[in-house]
Image (cartoon, rainbow, N blue to C red):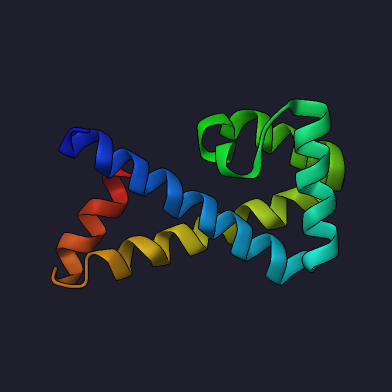
Length: 103
C-alpha cells in the first residue's frame, strides 16, 4: 500500500467515524442503526463504505429524514472541520485556514 493510498484510507475512515458519531449524538443509537439498515437494504451501502458512496448516503439520508437531513449534514461538516483542525495541531491559525479552503 502506498503512502497516498494509506492517507486516503485514513481520511475515509475518519469520515466514517465522524458520520457515525454525529448520527449517534443527534439521533440516538436506535435511529442510527435504522439508517444504516436502510442504507444496506435499499442502497447496498455498508456502514464502512459511506465515505466511498457519499452521494448515495446523502440521498438516502434525505429520503429517510426529509428536510431534517440538512441539519445533520451541517453538523457532519462542522465535525469534519474540527477533525481537520485537530489533525493539524502543529500548524498555526493561518495555515489551518488555508487547509480548510483547500478541502
